[in-house]
Length: 333
Image 1 (tube, helix red, strand yellow):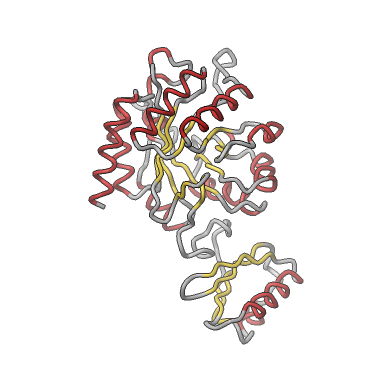
Image 2 (tube, one colour):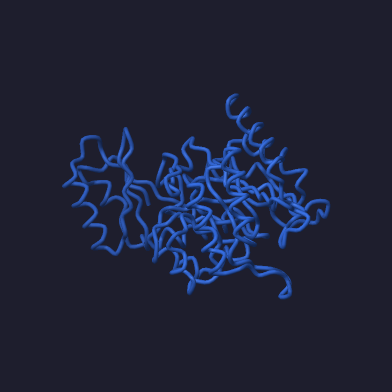
């Protein structure tokens, strides 16, 4: 349920209405725009009489929401959300590029890549310390040491860090991490989503699962937000279909759909979407043109020797050319 308040409603009147809702076991979420104030009702509203609420002097009108996701719903929050990622805003017209290697391999590697992507125009640094891999024999990441090396690269370049959390027990190691990534394989790890949502207000980059619908993605975001963390960024990284020419099938149209359904920022991962470095450039440009709020691109200083996903990793030189094209597209837009 969404309650739109009349213009001129005072803070004390808003607080009184919030208390009334809480007395009925409804959690109010307030959004204050330039022209109106909206209260979203989270909880079981089956016993709540909309007519009773609409009869209040401060209420303009009441609207029921059919979608199961509430906090992530644009009807709750008509304006685009802007998420602060370590001083870098994402969403609402603020475009961010997250770049770096799939996995952190050494101090030399991560610092060299961090310097290169910053020089090319990246605004955040990505790098995996904990890696979910299909094979138990594949490189699983450096773990806590990888986080330490990311912190060194952050000190060297000033770029905020984006890295994946796989298990909640490791959360205390993420004190210096600016954005927590929840990977595609964990998109529906609901206990992890709830724990992250309740424990921290740090931004969470939530990747769409390999076979997930958009509603399932938004419901996963809802788990985080309903637990107390509103700072969620959605990431489209392609889904698994019958097509085998690419690593995944990327439907860029979902960027437009997600912006219609939700106020949350939407970024696109052209590296996992295609699986091939030569394709990342054109897909990144297309994602920019369609209105994505940002990109997350894998960059490695020596892709043939990368311990993880070398085939889809751009070299610093390739990334520099891609950034130049992205800037031109954004100038046109």
